[in-house]
Length: 219
Ligand code: B12
Image (cartoon, rainbow, N blue to C red; front, top):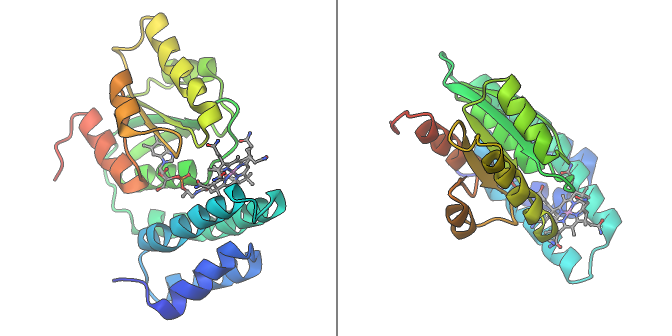
């Protein structure tokens, strides 16, 4: 079911205006109306935050607007993530994924959505949070006997941190033990394939990618 304009437009505006209360209220209304949480993320939140980022880059928005939009999105995401978990029908454990935002990067809205989608589809997710050092990824992978390691990187300035993390697994001779995947605005499919790691542009794709990485054929 697509999101009716009467719901999508005020919700989109709430993120652009960084209106946390409106985002909170309208997201709950949208869910009560039976709308698909992932569709709300893909067709309202992601485009709105992309526009906020564009306005920030143009110098029309400043850090306070960026922060307010982020806070409005975080409030909405909590409701949406709860709805995704409720709708998930996972009955078996498919594998363990260690997930985090790379060192120097504090963006975590997208990473949290990926974590929620993976959990809803049966993966155990060890969420290391944000600003995660390369060695913390390695330690968690070993301690938790992970199958997949997922790195989120939103900024061009933090892409090297993603690369260092991948290199550390290689340097320690661990590269064959784990499947690695990357996502977030600073990484591309081409970049990922050059480094020999998986890539997905969104959370639904991350689930399919993880299934492939643990050897489950797409249904
Ligand atoms: C909200 C936001 C913030 C919030 C973050 C709040 C939070 N708790 O996360 C705050 C205000 C804190 C913030 C801070 C900053 N930000 Co900011 N921010 C954004 C904004 C507007 C939206 C990001 C977002 O949440 N998108 C929505 C989510 C749902 O999308 P997503 O993250 O891309 O995730 C999806 C996919 O990418 C994928 N995915 C994500 N992770 C992973 C991982 C894996 C393994 C996989 C498979 C998939 C995957 O699935 C997700 C769901 O579909 C972006 C604009 C943009 N175009 O991205 C700028 C942006 C990322 N920020 C930017 C900047 C510059 C900053 C600051 C440096 C600003 C400053 N001067 O201080 C600081 C950075 C501080 C730091 N050290 O990290 C720039 C980065 C530019 C660059 N160099 O690349 C951007 C692009 C804005 C811009 N156009 O200039 N920011």
